[in-house]
Amino acid sequence: IQLTQSPSSLSASVGDRVTITCRASQGISSFLAWYQQKPGKAPKLLIYAASTLQSGVPSRFSGSGSGTDFTLTISSLQPEDFATYYCQQLNTYPYTFGQGTKLEI
Amino acid sequence: EVRLLESGGGLVQPGGSLRLSCGASGFIFSAYVMAWVRQAPGKGLEWVSSITASGDITYYADSVKGRFTISRDNSKDTLYLQMNSLRAEDTAIFYCAKVFEGYSSGSFVKWFDPWGQGTLVTVSS
Image (tube, rainbow over the protein chains, first blue to last red):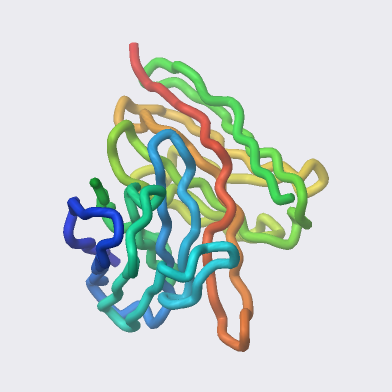
């Protein structure tokens, strides 16, 4: 299953609302997770089951979608949100990742 | 606190072998699926392999099938990745991750969390 994220990179400002999309090449139900990765750090789980916020993740992050089309939305960007974001499908092995979206100031 | 600590990375020549380890603490290791994910320099994430809680079933990416072997020792709370016939394109940071596969709020869900800090494998002559 191929995952296509868009855009590949995104420039935004503090306070902006941003949306990243992830499209699967075939249906994956809601077995989709979103991760945030900062330079030199391991990925961090933000959202699982397409729309469930992981404990401790700020509520400005939200996810939606099912089947083949998914979105990650950050309602009001904070300085610490500038990072790279990846989607991952966990419906079928191999558990593929999207190519990533780099969110820049 | 759940912690994962990878070790065993380093410089190896093409065609060589390396064994990575991932020591786990803070959770019942033997109850969870575990996985390896890698990230080539400046590139995205690539799932490499997963192993069931008991170690009886393994899964591999096509890019490593036949060359890498995932295993675990539940008595030592340790996950392994034996890497043989290494190629330059295997150069990457390798992360281990705890995998949750189960029911949460009535729905069957899966996720990778947490991840270790990673260990760098460099394949070069």
